[in-house]
Image (cartoon, rainbow, N blue to C red):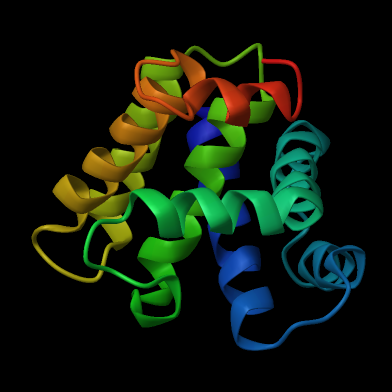
Amino acid sequence: MKRRQAREIALQILYQLDVNPVDPVEALELYWRTFSPSLELRDFVERIVKGVSQHRPRIDKLIDRYAEHWRLDRMDRVDRNILRMGVFELLYCDDIPMKVAINEAVELGKKFGSADDSKGFINGILDRIAKTVLEGTEDGGEGEQDMDGR
């Protein structure tokens, strides 16, 4: 439950960064001053926000590639940032099982998504990325894996 709460906070901060691009550390510090969550939550939130920010070009490229008939800039900001978090967890968080990363993103989509079909939209894209990039079941998947050794 703590990680889900941390993901919800991270989503708020990533949304803010999407609307008003500032340094992620600055956005985190502003949130901490305003809301003061526990240190346990802060660690995971920071990991997600800093990780998504650091790897955003690759994350966005993958989302754009696997979001059939959707351009990243045309997606709802909430859905887009849930996808960014999910892809970050899939690619860069070895301690989070693939199914957990996808399920948590889908749950965020149910709660905060833009439409009734947000959960299906998020699930479909993350599932395609997981199957092709992580499991290498599609031509070109192995090339993506080679970028960071996974």
